[in-house]
Amino acid sequence: MKSQHPVGVPANDDGKPRRSDLTLRVWSAAVLIPLALVVTWWGGLPSFLLVALVSAIVFAEWANIVGRSPRLLPSTTDVSVGIAFVALSAIVAGLQGFGAGLAVLIAGIVGVALLSRSAWLAGGVAYAGLLGVCLAALRSDGADGLTAVVVLLVLVWGTDSFAYFAGRTIGGPKLWPRVSPKKTWSGSIGGLVGGVLLAALTAMLFGVRVGPVLVLVLALLSIVSQAGDLFESAIKRHFDKKDSGCIIPGHGGMMDRVDGLIFAAIGAALIGALHGGNHHIGQGLLSW
Image (cartoon, rainbow, N blue to C red):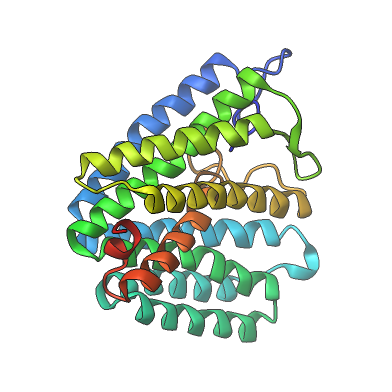
C-alpha cells in the first residue's frame, strides 16, 4: 500500500500529486507492466535474466541506502560481488531449481558478510536475492509457473492500487504512523479485498479452480506484500532516505516498485515448495 500521494511524486499545496508527475508515473507503468508480462509469458532464460537484472538493481539501491551511513559505506568490490551473486542465484534458480538457487544465494550472503564485515550489506544480498530466486523458481514450473507469476503480479499490483485509492477516498486511522504516516487501515483493507478479487479472477481466467484455501493463500500473500511495503519504508526512514533511487520516471527506484513483490514472492515460493516440491512450485501454490 502506498501513501496518499505516490512515493517520489511531488505534491501540490493541497497534498495531491502534480498532474505532470502523475502523468509521467502512468506512462512509465504503461510501458513497464506490459514489458514484465510479455517477458513472463515468454519464459525461459529471458525471464530469468530480467528477474536477475531487477534483483541486481534492487541490491545496488539497497547498498546506496546503507551507504548513507559513513561507517557502513560499502566498497565497490563489496557491491560488485553482491550484485554478481544476486544475479547468478536468480539464473541458477530458474535453470536448476529453487534449492540450487538458494544454495548460491546463501554462498553470496556468507561471502559478502565476510568480505564487507557488514550485516546490513549481507542482508541486502538476502533481500534482493530472494526476489530473484523465488520469482525465477516460480516461473520455471512450465505453464503452472506462468500462471503463478501472473497471478502473483496481479495480486501485488491490485493490492497496491486498491490500497492507494481506498486510502485516499475513505481515509481514517493510520496503519503505522511512525513508519509510514500516510498509510491507513482503510487503504490496507481495501488493498486486501481488491487485490485478492483481481488475483482470483485472473486465476480463473487461466483455468485454476479457486476454492477457499486458494483465496486464503492469496489473502495471506496480499497481507505479506503490504508488510514488505512497510519494511522498505522502515529501512528508508532508518537511513533518512526518501526514495531508493530514480531509475523509473515518476516512480523513484526499483526497490520502491517491488518492495511488496519481494515479500509476496518469498511467501509464494515457500508455500509452493512446501506444497508442490522443489520443481513444482507454481503448481504447489495454485492447486488446492
